[in-house]
Amino acid sequence: MKTPKRYIAKVLAGVAVLATVASSQAAIRDTVTFNGWECTQTTNPNEGTLRSHSFPNSGYTLGKITWSGTITKINPAENADWLLENLILVKTPTGACAVMPLGTVTGYTSPAAISGDFNIDIGATTPFAAPWEFRYFNTYDDGDEGLADASIDITINLTDEVPTITPPSAEDLGEIGDPGTTVNRTLDANQIKWFKFSISEMTGAKFFDIATFGSDMDTEIGVYDKWGNLIANDDDGGTGLDSLLSFGSASAGHGGNGDLCYAGEYYLAVGNWDMEFGGNFGVTGGGPEGGALVVAFTTDIGGGGGGGGTFVNPSTYTVLEGSEFNGNLQSLFTSDDNALCLFNDEITMGCAVEFRGSVFQSFSTLTYIVESSVTRPGLSVGISLFNFMTNSYNFVDGAVATTTDTTREVVISSNVSRFTNENGDLRSRVSWLPINDEDPAQDGWLHCVDRAVWKVQ
Image 1 (cartoon, rainbow, N blue to C red):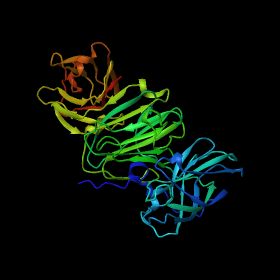
Image 2: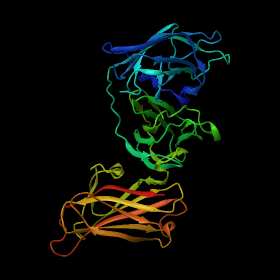
Image 3: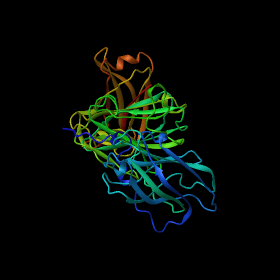
Image 4: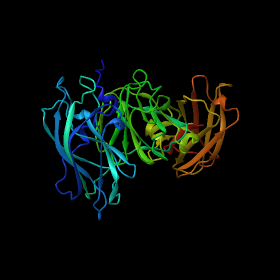
């Protein structure tokens, strides 16, 4: 049975690992102190209690930001405040933003010493004459609505220490723009899957939503900025067990998780409940369920991948002729030299594999993309798509097979509905045969598929 998490888990929980002990080697270049700073009880970072400050010092570029201070419980009705519910949204004059957690634990003895560091706008030049914004918020109201649960005295230091940031290995979805895009993938048990995407402007008056509607598992998702800071995460914010994060404008039912504060790259972690989201891209957990994963991005931000199509990965494959040598389903999703490789059949000398997937959106153009190679010359490669109207395969492309990875794209824009059915099923087949009877394919030659995906738009 799933144990519900405290409400913070819906919005900005799991930040426990983000705050680390401040480095004693950091050279402090500028500083500000805020005393008696009471939080606002809200799950929206932009509604936090505002403090601002201009940092006048110059002659350095921004590195880590360190901080230290004291937190005190001030709500007389309750004594249940959790330290990790206290966060500060930081916005720089360049528009970059990050959420700075004040602690890593649940209950705490008040007053409590706090300290840590985080990254934002690394390499930005000084001075920062325009004011920075700091918004202090607490994501779970422990009682007596309207009364703040905690207050802090805090000193925030800008340093020139360059942090080590190691982004995760992620599937690059490119720029995503109006109206958005949907990706269909397979999630293995205990797997955490990473995506990288970019936007052409901050959300602000625009919105950017991420949802897992249609996935056949209990998902969790978390969005990180390019510096490794957790922006927001969610468990069951969508329908049922689906996850949902909504950034930017509150119009038309969007917003609620703050802003994506800069134009550029972000990272999304997706997995099966139960997961923990920490700083520096620190995501752990991922439960035993696996299956079809649907991640829908919806936005009114201009440009990007709205017209670029949605990639659909196969959910299963079957070796029809020959035998499997190495590789797996995930080998087929990206062009990374990790391939599904097969031996040809010893009697027919042929080799063939079928792929199946599902699409969850309407489309007018279907593109099938195959990247493959063989380990000997004298072979041909053929690509076929399953016609659901005739209940048979249609041969759509053929070429001489190459001994180095070669990508072929087959674009179908006429009568495209024949290659899917009312359930959104997709099927394809890749096969190899000797070109002639001279020195036919011998035992043990490899036929490798590095990538095999559909693209719909």
